Image (cartoon, rainbow, N blue to C red):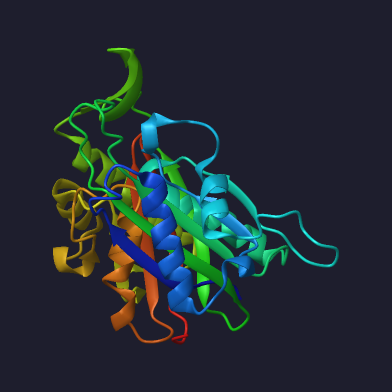
Length: 293
C-alpha cells in the first residue's frame, strides 16, 4: 500500500505568468486536475512547496490563495462533507519531496482521499530581485492511495549544515522596497551531490535494495555540476540519472524530471527520487510505478 501519483503537470512562464508564482501555480493545478478528470472540490489537502513568489510576500500562505483561485472547497464545509486543508512547506529544491512525505502521512492514516501538491517560482520583477537565477515554472502532482503495493515506500533524509556557504537567498530593504538577493559558490553542485548520494544510499538500505534493483533514478536540481557529481558519487553512468531539461528550474525540478521518466516505465518499476538543496539538506524516496490511470 502507498501513495501514488495519479497525474502531474508542468507549466512554463508566459508573458502573463513569468512574474507571478501564484498564476503559475494556479495554471499548473488547473491543468493537472483537468488531465486527471477531477474537480477541484475532490481535493482534501493542498500543499504548496514554492519559494519565490509575487512581491516577495511571506504571508499569507500561498496555498490558501491557490486553493481559492482553483475553487477547492472555498466555502465552509457542509455537514457530512469534507473541506480542503491547505498550507505551505518551504524546503527549496527538496520541497516537493517533503510535500510527498507529508501527503503520504495523511493518506496512510486515511484522513484524506486525495491531495494536490503545487509548486512554483518566479522573478518578482519590478526591481524586487537582483540577478534572479531561476526559470519561471510551476508544477502540480495529484496524489491518491493504492492498496496493491504501488506508490511511495521508504524516505531517508540527511543534513550537512554549511551555514549558507554554498547557496543563500536573502530579502533586504533597499530603494524603498524589499529586494531579493542571491549568493552561491562554485562548489555547490559537488556539495549537493555528496548529500544526495548519502540520502540515496540511506533510502536503499532502509528498503533492503541495491542500485542494481532500481529501474530509474530521478534527481533534482538539474544543475550540470550536481548531475555529473551525483552520478560519480553513486558510481552509475550519467545517463542513468534523469533531471529536468532546464537546469534553472528550482522547486519544480523534481516534477520536471519525473515528467521525463515515468511515461516510459512499466508498471511495477522501481524509481528512486533524490533531491538536494540549500542548507545543505538532501532526501530520497522509493517509488513503485503503478498501472496507468
